[in-house]
Structure formats: structure tokens, C-alpha cells
Image 1 (cartoon, each protein chain N blue to C red):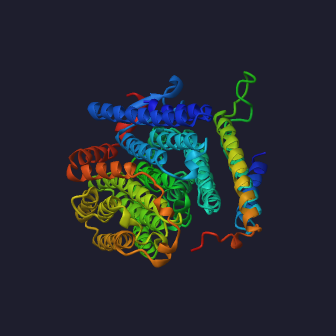
Image 2 (image 1 turned 90 degrees about the vertical axis):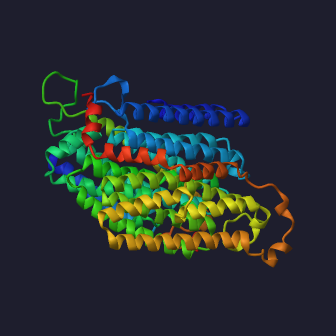
Image 3 (image 1 turned 180 degrees about the vertical axis):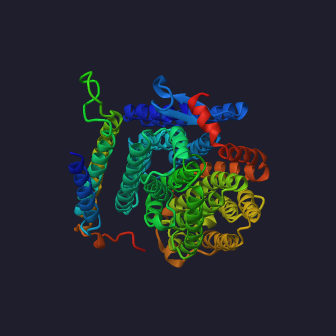
Amino acid sequence: MLWPVLLPLGGAAGTLLLMKHPRLQRAVALLALLTALAASARLLAEVWRSGQPVVYQLGGWAAPFGITLMGDLLAVTFALMAQTVLLLGLVYALGCRDKVTGYPTFYPLFLTLTTGLSGAFLTGDLFNLFVFAELLVFSGTILTAVSDDPGGVEAALKYFFISLLASACLLLANGLLYATYGTLNMADLAVRIAADGTPPLLPLAIALLLATFMIKSAVFPFHFWQPDFHAVSTTAVSAMLSSVVVKLGVYGFLRMTTLLFVAQAPTIRALLVVAGMAGVIYGGLGATGSQHAKRMLAYSTLAQVGFILAAIGWGTPLALAAAVIFAVNHSLVKAAMLMLAGVMASRAPVKSASFAVLQGVGKKLPAGGALFLLGGLSLAGIPPTNGFISKLAVFSSGIAAGQWAALALLGLGSVLTLIYTIRAFMRIWWQPAEDNQAAAPAKAAKPGDRLLAPTLLLLIALGLGLWPAPLVHLATATAEALGDPALYINAVFGR
Amino acid sequence: MELLTALAVGALFGIAIFQILRRNVIRSVIGLILLGNAINLFLLSAGVYNGTVAAYTTLAGPYSDALPQALVLTAIVISMGALALTLALLIIVSARYKTSDLDDITGLRY
């Protein structure tokens, strides 16, 4: 239970000690992530087999007093998803030409990013969640600030500022809940809030938690930092930030509506549907109007998170399962797409992902084009990709819930997705390169980033599209478990 | 004491939010520091509803709750790291743009 968090943390310490030995350091980083992934997979198998969440009480302190690590189906699924993508992100970093990945502190920071994300998913304590989220924010900020792109520092400053405000909100919500209920253990809080939902500080705490997770997930009114931040960070990192790190907020919303604030959930859900819809349309339009491949994909994340929020907002078991399926599929595909954009940028005459530079660059790399097209079709939800499965799940849950207006907007969002991904494909792989590029010196002969990581990610994605049964079963079981908060609470208290 | 703490927390929050909304980056960072302190003070006050005697110093008296103090300690350490990182970023950004006015930091506006 402890291993998925402890192994990356230990790896971070180990890589920090090995700063003088780059090759050994990389091997240790890879080993730490591989073993962490194996530990998560084992944990998932254990939870799946027993049908019971796995609980670990840190230091042996009984539930409401100590810190609880809590692996229920939702948490473990998200942790496994995050570590799969992070491992492939590390593989990309090992095979890429960015100067950043040569810095001795890159790998320790990458591993603390992993620790923060896995810990935030697996913790059962609200203050512990704050600590892990801070670890995540610090690592992400530094990794972006040292990016090869000169805009990195500015984007990092913006992101760090807004994230500190989010952390302040989370800390304040912690304080409010502690002052009201005298506990920060999520299971204990859930029991006490269900028993008495009238204290005057409770709505304020809910609002602050909502704001926190909205900033973490870059949901529509709090999205303004996200395209900047995700577009300038180095590819291996931006692929992580835009795919799995934004899922922290999604996870928070799922926990809020199904565990902590069950009685207040209808209000939260109504708000999430509206924010999600706004995100779908705004993100779709922003991506369509964008002139920069990575920026386009960052806007696209805004839209895709909107789909997930809409599903969480409908709140039926079918919709919750759809949200989980969508979150997993989006993580895999978005990471792969950003990596492909990075691969093309590394082969462009000027290192940039703007369409003006990338136009026609793909002609030399048709394999990348095939992968990008596959990823684009998956984002838009065309069979036989996994995107089709997630869109199908979201739309069928929406039809079952009778949300016609929302479905129309989601349909519009899907059409926008198809437009911008196909347009990006056309510009990079279809149109002939412009003349000014031919005049540039023959620097394009240098080898670019390797295609291995995005290929593996898209293979997993395609596999989940052709054989969706395991993921669908897992998501359905997760949604069922989410429908019964008593399961989580009893597991924590060892009843 | 209660009134004094409440007033101090309120005043700190007010000043912090006013400073955060200023255009000068350095002032916003000062606002962020003040916000952290306001929240820490609030957390600390959340633990004293049972009494103000520190836990385990004497056997008598209603003890104050020790957990918020632990939370505040953690939060202080984190906010110190955050402040150091913010200032480091700020030095680079202000040196690059030769300004501390947020409206002039426009390198990513495209």
C-alpha cells in the first residue's frame, strides 16, 4: 500500500545523491517508476480481487487520529493511470533532445512530481492532500521554469501564483472543516457532515474546496494560466501536466460529490455541469483559433476536462463510470499527442511548436503522422479508438439522464475537436513546407526526439479501444463503489 | 484575546487580498505572504476552543488542541519554500522585463 508513494520518493532521494552520475541516475529513476507502477498494479489487483478498499494507517495510529492512506478502486485506478503516463513521460525524457533533461535535478523533480500525484490520489486525509498537492505544484513549477523555452519562467510565475492561491484556499477549507467538525480524516468528516450539515462554515468550506479543485483542473473560470503554462514547459513535462496532473481536480470533484458532501452534492453537480459546458465550448473554440500545436492541445485539455465534469455533474452511476473511463482515456491520448507535437518541434528548423514553423515538417516522418491522426481521431471520439468508447459512455449516460441541451453542446464540442485535430494534422503532415524553411540551413538532419513513448501510449490507447471490456468493468465497479460511501468509511475504521 | 485574534485575522485577510490585487508583482507577493500568515493564525485559533493551555505542560486545565499547531508548523515550512521559489522566479522575470508592473510582463501574449 505504501509502495506506490514511497518508491518514487525514495527514487527522488536516490537520484539526488547520484547527481554526478547521469547514466546511473537515469537508470535509478526508471527503476523507481517501474517498481512504483508494478506496486500500483498489484494494489489494484488486490482491491479488485477482494472487493474491499486497502487501508494503511501510518504509524499504526487508529483511523480518525493518524494519517490514513486509502486505496479504494477510484484512488488506485487514478494512481495506476498517473504512473503509467508518468513512466512513459520519463521514457520520452530519456530519448529527447531538450537541454532540460540533461540537468542533474530534472529526474529528482520528475520523481517528486510522481510522488505528489500518487500521494494526493491515495491519501485519505485532507491536510495530507494539501501537502502532496504542494509537492506536485513545486515540482511542476520548477520543471517548467527551467524549460528550454524562454517563456518558461514567466509561465511558471503565473502558475505558481495561482497555485499558491489554490493552496491557500485548500488550507483555509482545512481550517474551516477542522474548526467545525474537529477532524480532517475524509471518512470521519463524511460521517460527521452527513450527521449534521447545518454549520454556517460548511458552505464556505465547500466553496473553497471547489475553487481549489477548479484551479487544479483548470476548469473554465479558472483556466487562464493553463494554455501558457502547458505550452511552454518542456515536452516530457507538459505531456504530464496536461494529461494526468489536471486529473487531480477531477479526482477531488469525484470525492467531494460521492464521499464528503453527499447531501450537498446536487448543488455542486449543477455548478460542475455549467462549468464543464463552458469549458467544452471555450476550450474547443480556443483550440480551433490557436496557432501553436502545444497551445492547441492545452486548450483541448480544457474542453476534454469539461466532458468529464459534465459526466460527474450528471452524477448517475453510469455517468460516474463514464467520467472514469473518459479520464483514463484522455490521459493516455493527450500525453501521446503532446509528445508527438514535441517530436515534430524537435525536428523543425527552429525549435518551436507553432504551426507556421511546423508546416510540412512531418513529411519526413510519416509514422508520426499516422500516430497523430490516430490520437486526433481518439480525441474526437471516432471508432476504433478508445476515445470512441469514452464518448459513447458519456453520451449514453447523458441520454439516460435526459440531459438534451447539455448533450447538444457536447456534440458541438466533439465536432470542434475533430476540426482542430484534423487541421493540425493537415498543416504538419499534409501541406508542403514553406519556402523560408528550404532556405534555412540543413539543420533538420539532426536526430530529433524518439517516437517510442507516444507509440507505446497510443498502443495502449488503441488496445483499450479494441478491447474495452476490462476498463469498462473497472469503471463500472468503481462507480458502484462510489455510490456507497459506507464502503469507504467502514474500511477506514476497520469495521 | 478571542476578539483580538478575530480582528487580527480579519485585518490580515483584508490587507492581503488588497495587496494581491495590486499591479505591482512585489506587492502581490507580499499579499501572498500576508494571506499565508492570516490562514495560519486562523488555523491556530481553530484549536483553542477548548482552552489555551499548551498540551502536556501541566496536568491541570483544559488543554488547547495540539493538532492545529502541527498543521501550522507544516504550513509555515511549505509557505517558506513557496516564498523562496516565488522570489527566485520574480528576480528572473523582473530582470528580463525590467519592470515589476504585471501589465508589462507580456511575453506570452499571443
